[in-house]
Length: 332
Image (tube, rainbow, N blue to C red; front, side, top):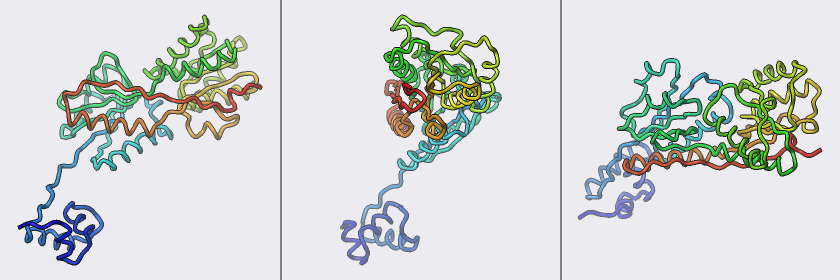
């Protein structure tokens, strides 16, 4: 006749917690104690939980030119968060870096033993993604979305984020809106540009060509690019600029200040990502805050749902953001 784990603990004169850790193969006890409990469990007919195979998730970090997905706090936190969420769910995470320059040669990086794959697609293009999709392995695209590719995707609501920020500025009666655009165009940036145009169009305004300045999406290079633009005496400047990310905003700000412009008195600037630097530079940067932790939670949750039920309909999820106003958009 079998006994309960409580009865076994009483017979062995040990705690129920020790019995549970031994039976469920958890840390916290010595291997000698574990073996002692397991042998006693067999002797008394106590059912030992069967070990379940640990799920494996491959996290592919795709890089094109590498200017966007860099070692910044935003992406470091995102990768760290995915790792943390996998540990919570007792999932084995395998991280791989895949570069566009040798994509076809690196197709073997796809782990066919993985239960699921997450692709960080910030820099990915549609043709790259088609090479990476294995119909036999549940796959989720993170931080990118393609309307005509039928896989689960989770991304930031880029268009509405820029739309709401610019709408707020227009409602304050600012009409000269400019755009500090990344000279590397990814789907996220294109969506942000569309949001700006949508907010302007609603008020009968439009994004003037002379108010669009293309900058390299790193702090140092955007600073140098903006300096070169400002050297041209014929350059026309808007009263408010939306930047594709905080690094572009910070680099452009430095150049503008060096050329004698006062921020926010002469020019106001809005960034995107709300990186830590936003509160450390002077003046502090108004920015779009992205709930990175929620991105990670939803990504793992959705992938596990897909692994458990491959026949679920695909789902494209957009995560909303919040506009954090600081000194660069103050009315002075």
